[in-house]
Amino acid sequence: MFEQTFQSVKLICFSPTHGTRNLLEAITFGMSPQPTGLIDLTLPTTTPTKNREVVADLVLIGVPVYAGRVPLVAVERLQKLSANGVPAVLVAVYGNRGYGDALLELNDIAVKCGFKPVAAGAFIAEHSFSTAEYPIATARPDAADLLKAEQFGAEVAKRLTTDKITAIKVPGNFPYKEGMGSQGISPETDKSICTDCKYCVAVCPTHAISEEDVTITDVSKCILCNACIRVCPVAARQGKHPFFATLANKLSTNCQTRLEPEYFL
Image 1 (tube, helix red, strand yellow):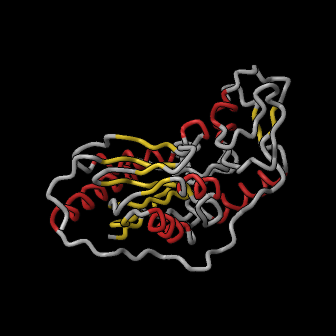
Image 2: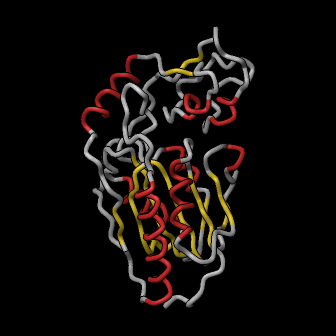
């Protein structure tokens, strides 16, 4: 049995476009107390450079889903953390297409790092390839999603304080499905309208964009999170390669049926 109160709750997230972090915070609204710390794995500058032991009464670990998997860069950064049986709530966030093997993969990573998964959830956020022309889960998480996230948090808190916790089972297959590696492309900068604000440089989770010349992007480092497109104040950062429109069109066409959050307790 867990103690009837837990005082130290930490969030651990990889969240280039903030959807995952927003949902983790929504989940905590249903808990008491509120989070006492954040380990943000999104940027190299905020990621631990060596093994870091996580000490808390409870952690929430959240990642986005890329092609049914945990993004490789997120895997590598999660593996720099260790814990000694800290209870963990696992959260996979996807763009209304499906979460594939990502939740199982996240569960396996957490266990190897020393966390003890006690609950899990799969939630929906606007897809990073969504555009005005090709909307994909636009404006999600919406009010209904956030309410369900809060209710999930309340249910987790109740279970931790009243129930005997056993290992959870989450959907997925092993070996995991093949993930999406480098496509050899990236968003590009339209120099004619770029103001050189360097917001794109600041949000890139892999430092793929040159700070000296934002028109230069290392495509081998780009993970196609599209955070640079989302943050550009003048729309100078664009997905010009046909891959962007082709994928967005496919997802917008095939993923119109509204999917709902799923919980595993």
